[in-house]
Figure 1 (cartoon, rainbow, N blue to C red):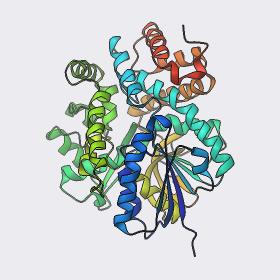
Figure 2 (figure 1 turned 180 degrees about the vertical axis):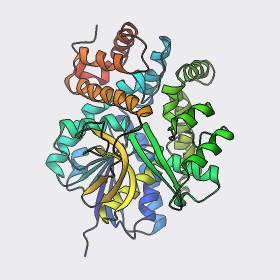
Figure 3 (figure 1 turned 180 degrees about the horizontal axis):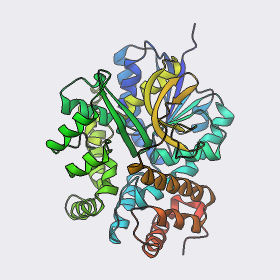
Figure 4 (figure 1 turned 90 degrees about the vertical axis):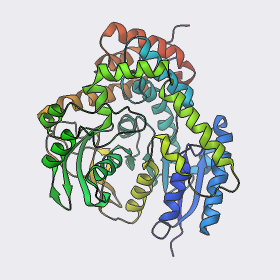
Length: 443
């Protein structure tokens, strides 16, 4: 008789948690969860209580014997866990608003996982993740860490390089969203579509696309370009469409985040305009979250409300539940995750984190080798990997020069002088969440 699975979710007060709970309830027959611990910090206690109470109502409605625990004591929660999921935001949405607005003052894209904003999200997040890993090494050394805290690729890179946690998988909803979007364009069920993904988190390409096992990449590119459809959009990224002849030349499917690199000036114009009218994405999300938490408070609500899809992270939690179930059941199905390269992409170091299709086993993800990436996309992927590596090093060391180097080599930052100005202003703005840079921040 199985003892039942213990899952700990750090950032349990997140608005995404109801989707996670729904996914666990749906899969209970194959993933018998006995305990679900939702953990947060004191600043998140109110949200934790609202979301946690909704989670308990959802479980009660299901009639399943899952014990839901709410706590601010991470160490108490982690003891003997089987899986730990992380979905938190250091500095909450106020920090995201700074990441998005400060670069714009310098004519640089402000975005939460790309450019200066992505760097600073990593600098704030990585030390916290490494602390969680230390606790895991002591309290649940056999647990799997399933991270969907952004920037997921950089965070996975840091865990692989700076901890003893080998059982780590980074997760993103972009590949799932692309598959769903392409299925919609073609008017077919999503389970008939398979895409060969390879690259990095928020820098992943669909190298080939299959319908019922047959490659349809050329026909799909023709269809997407003749209708000027992108195949997929994200709630948080404006869809400008692509120059059709460019996509025909690229010969692979880009992800929505590639717009920041291939359409930089247009995306910057859109952001500047939006900041004057609706505000930055963080301000929009704040309003969406406010509405969601009002819904969550309703004592009669005992399901995941459909309004959650407005939040921009649809399929995230469902992808996490799928991944956990596949590891637990040794399913050996194919999912797209962030894991150690181990030679799967020839032009990326073996010990680095990549995002790629993997066979999911009880030993974890086994990357499906693709050899080298097409020459047209290889350089950009390598450039972003260099940025992630150096950013992770800066987060761990708190070294100012390393942080500046990461900022300068990011392709969205136009010069070393502007990089330094943005770095100094953002270090000051985020100083409460960057203790490792205390000596570098000008008082």
